[in-house]
Length: 112
Ligand SMILES: [Zn+2]
Image (cartoon, rainbow, N blue to C red; front, side, top):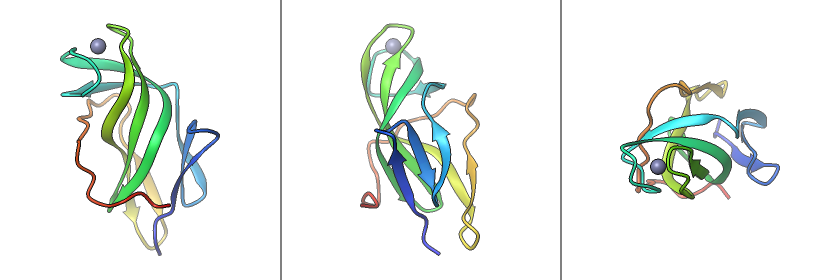
């Protein structure tokens, strides 16, 4: 079974295997990110610019802004969750409180 990942509603949601799993409007702490100079940005997630699969991880480039300094932008690739069981498509989101580190590289192309 392949993992099917899409943006829905103009990037407001990420669906994994046709289930809405990740939504905007969360605050994600991002370290070593490319949008602003804050050491750890409190990044308000306003949309998902691109989504992709890098098995077993689901990744996205996230549009939003750092609420500490107000800079807006789109991040590099951030892991938003992972597929635990490729057979059933069972998905586990990343802990929203955990600090994430965006990665400029994305090893696989986007699904579309
Ligand atoms: Zn900032």
